[in-house]
Image 1: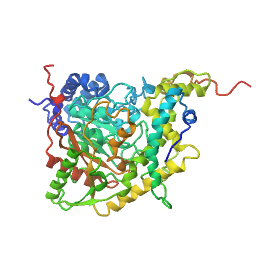
Image 2: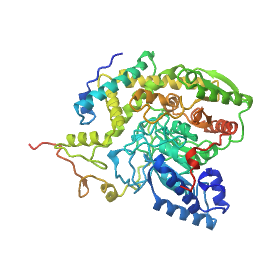
Image 3: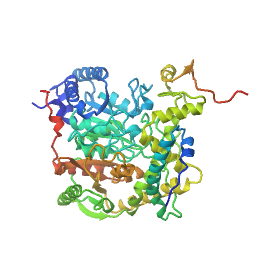
Length: 96
Length: 492
C-alpha cells in the first residue's frame, strides 16, 4: 500500500520545528516503515475486538485520603523558568 | 584469587553474609573494573561514587550488627538511566533531559535501596529506550564487552554491558520490545522481562505504556530470581500494577524439565535466523528433550504481523507519552515568541533522530482519517496474537525460540536502516504485545566468539515455570565463558 504523508502537518501536530531537509528525510523514512507496518491491514479482523492493554483490566481506585506528595521547591527547581511557585512560559493568548 | 567483580550475585551475598568480604571491598572491585573498562565500553552515563560509598558503608554496618539484611544488602546494582533517581541526574540518554534532577525515586529504586543494595550509577541506553543497539544515545554508543567493535544491543545496552563485564553485579533495564532480553543475549548474560504489571512502572520514564516493563539483568538465572523478588509486588502508585499474589519465582529452580511440554515456535525459526543461532537453539531443544521434556513444534501464525503491529502501537503511545517534554516543567528550553514556538523549538533541538522519527510515525498513525486503518487495526492484530498465545498455552507449558535472530552486529551496521534495526526484535516483540514474561539465557558462542541467547516464554504470571525451564537451560549449557574485557586486569 503506497503511503503519502503530509509530513509538515504531522510535524506541526507533534510540535517539532523541523527544517525542509529534515522533513524530506523523515517523510521518506516514515513511509518505508509505514509501508511495512501496513502489512497488518492484510489480516482479516472483522469482528475482532481491539486490545489496548495486555491485562484487560478496568480502573484502579484508592481511598480518597491525603498522601505524601512531591516537595514544591524541589519540583520547581527543575523548571527552565519560574515565577514564585509558577512555571513561566511565553504568551499563550494574544493581547486583546 | 578471584576478583570480587567476577562473582555472581549469589556468591557475593554468601561472601558478605559470611563475613568473607565487606560491601566496601566489593564496591571497590566493581569501581576498579569500571575504571579499567569504561573508556572502551561506555556502559555508564554517570557513576555515583559518593552515593554508592555511603550505601556500602551502611550495608556493612547492617551486616556487621547482624541486623535484618536481604540477599541484596551490599550488592552493587546499576540502573538504566530511564529510571528516576532522586537528586541523581536522569537523562534517558536525551539532550532534552540533560541536567534533570528528579524530585523522587522510582518505586523499583526505592525497593532496591530498602533491600540495602548499592546503586553504582546510571547506564546508557538508546534515547528514551528507542533502539536495539544503544547507538541512539545522545551521549555516545556503548560497546559490547565481547568485542568492542560490536554493539551491546539495546535499548538496555549499558546495563547489559556493565553486568557482563563486572562493573555491576546486577542491573535493571526496561523492555518494551525486547530491550532487556536482546542486549542480555548479545552480551552473554541473563535478561528477564516479567509479566506486565508485576513490577511497578512508577518512575520509569514512559515510552509505550502498555508494553513497558522493568526487569533484571544478571549473570545467572538464580540471580535474576533474587532481584525480581525484591522488585515485584503491588504498588498503588502504578494504576496498572498487578494487585494479586506474586508467583513463587524460586520454587521450580531445582525441578528440571521432566514431563514439561515445550513448544518450539515455528514462526521464529528458519528463515531470517542466523544459522549458527538456529543450530545452538536446536541443540538446546534436543538436550531438553533428553532431560524428559515433551517437545513439539507450535505455530502462532499471527506472529508474522507482530512487528508491524508493534511499529504502530509503540510509536503511537510514544508520541502521546513524549508530549510531556515541552520545555515547561523540566529539562531543555529553547526560546520562541509564542508558547507553541517555544515547544516546537525545544523539542526539535532536544530529541534525536530516532525519537523524532517515532513521534512523527505515532502522530501520523493517530491522526484523523488514519486512526482506524493503522492504530485500530494494530490493536485488533494484538488480540489475534494474544489468541495465538492462548491456544499455544493450551498445548504446551512454555514456548522457546532464539532471543535475537543474530549475535551482536557491528557498530554502524544497521544505523541508517530503521527497518533492519527493527528486525532485531522480531523474536521478543510478541511477549510485549501479550504482556507475558520472557527470559534470555546464554547457551554458547558463535564462530566469532559472540554469545547466543535462548529465549523462554511463559503465560501471564507463569514466572515459576519460566524460571524452572531457564534454570535447566542454564545447567545444560554450562555457559561459563567471560568476555575478553572482563579479563583486563589491574596491570593496566
